[in-house]
Length: 628
Image (tube, rainbow, N blue to C red; front, top):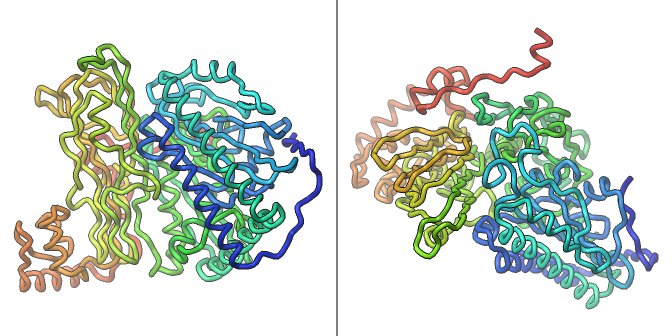
């Protein structure tokens, strides 16, 4: 049974005309309210994932739950369909179970707060914020076990409950929830930050409605939705063809030795509507790399990608959802069946953006991006502190790293940048102050970005020296299947992780693994992937390549991928460069639209030699066994 909205004032809002100036003022006030939500959050939270990196996502929606400003699209519709209860003035909803809200949040680490905003007895808006909690219990510190076989191994699951009911705080509920986590102080502070952010936005909404009038405010939100609908309809007509196009990419492995896992999507236009069909995507994994992809969330991903590529001035919101139909097979990697584990879903989440780029660029290759929005590298480090004044204290780090952003039509991909525009790195000073570690290296990885007219962004080489015994976990991808290049650009280099023990011995460790014991003095070399290149690398300015040699972004050997002959100080040999480029053009033929590097079969054959790790084994699913 869907949620029941209780209003003391049953009078509907009147739709009134909005002049352009008023609409512009309200639009920008909404933008500012969203920014204020973020500012409130980072000033109140305690965990480095939220406080330092901004791993939280705000939302302001209209009375029906459609997002007006935000980032991930509205999850209120899924919540309202699944919540068997009432919504009243003074209530606040709290939840973390993806299966209870149709995947609106995609793993249990994300705690979601929903606040219905009432004014004069009527529901006038919703505000919401969810953020990643650094620990919610479960079998490993950080609550993201890559080898989990079910969601029950991943920590506390919170169904939709009222943390505030008619203005009364449910203190017993929070005592129960916080009792499950290894870091209750962080979780309490982070939850308070989510609540405060929602209340700040609610105040701004009621202030706007009080200034302009309730009908004007609500009508303005509807016009913003309608404007977005008109813009997206034009973009779809321009960029999406009626003839189907398909694209597929792979998650390298599942952490259990199996992979790669295919994600396939077919796109076509039917009249004004675009259809995105994930038929052909592999079945769900036995491990935690499944991504319960909410259809509305993917509609927002599609809209964001379209807007940022074709018209970045558009304020994206939920107004265009009826123009998109998303089909995801039940039981697939993107719609697993309960109780499938979900905590490692970040790799599929990143790969979705690579797939969108591959789909949308086939009709308009001039707008095509290479691959590089590929994962979200995680490091976990936990144990008992040994530093003076902190002896015996439990410490626990969850950090998000960055890879190389793909080469783009307008220029090079940024080096070591976040997948999400709002994310920032954890400052090294913060890490060294609050955790027993020292950062020995934090720099770009030369040559890791794919060569192209526009170079793919380089990955990052970060070296951690651990100062206390403990356990580490690593979640990353793009170590087996490289990020592909486009329009003649070359693939980026793959990720790798090397543990250097205090005695000088080294071992290559997997990119998805938990519970690796480390000792004081050990070092971890954490190297992320580079983005694919865009355009013909033989057309790149040789002097620019020489400059990048001097800057440490490209090596003299890597410069040869651009057909550039240069010394270690970046001095370009013009005659030798001309000769090399002539030879390379004659040998290669026409540049490829997509360059995936080697085939999956060749990657398997060469895997151990090239990566030091055994090749993942092709998964076999139950229905395949039955068919045989």
